[in-house]
Image (cartoon, rainbow over all chains, first blue to last red; front, side, top):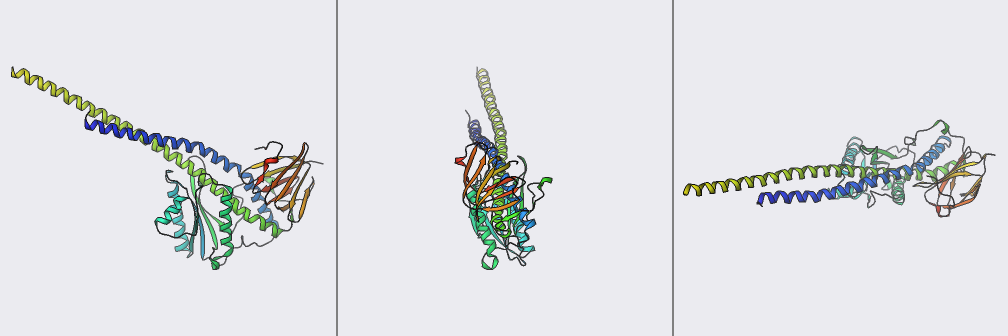
Length: 300
Length: 93
């Protein structure tokens, strides 16, 4: 076998084993994205119940709560960036980071605030470390299957920093950059202002029966709000984390699908080239034999 | 008297749903009992047991902090974590 032919066959084999890997990753992502979507769906009752309760208190009890009060001057704005732990998910992490950079520009250059980053996912951490930028805190190791405890931990830290305010090293407002799962083909990067809270029922459309009755509060409105609002923040973060995990897996599935397709294309090309090289070799050998034979015949 | 429609919701799933004649839970101020026809109420719950009296016996679960809302005989109990090990009937998804 000629050198050229061997080279093509070798490359084709290497692409074939890559294809096996990407195919396996595609299948794994495909099966896990189903589970991730189920988790998003399963947490909807909790989110709805909390949103309903918060809206009910907000519309009846006329109490001011630090978590809902706008600060007059905002100096430091916290941004929670939700990215992934692992790559090979196409543009997933890249587009989250890009969006966060746009937000930084908006906050720092247009509005004159200082951006305070909070990161989740190793990719975001790597992005900041590589550029030598500082960040407030990072959480990682759970991006494709977040737990409620993680959401609560993040929420506690962020709420505490918000309540502390910029004078005490905290923040005056808080945004989340995350990916919203629309469907298997569409995932949108979105920026949401989390704190101070604006209670809007955007996730759950209100039915007619949902007009709030005159609630009694136990023990009283302010205390109920005190207990509910941190839960509301947690549930928003929890929902963002779950949506992000579903988006990550969907993005990975798509990226791996196109990688597999590309590998197939490459294998086809290399097979053709190898066949061509083999044919060229055979043609050359025949013409050498024919040439040799006729030279012998001429010599007689 | 009509029965209460009860939903028990944890952070990651709906734990239980069904009809009951009485619900009792521990609020900040003390034990709280809900019977059909209760006025709309929003109460903060502390760690403790929630008892749901159904036709076929009592269901008791342990929750950590959460809250409870009652309106038109619909009771929603929300907690971050629910220990559902002691549930006798199967949860409805």
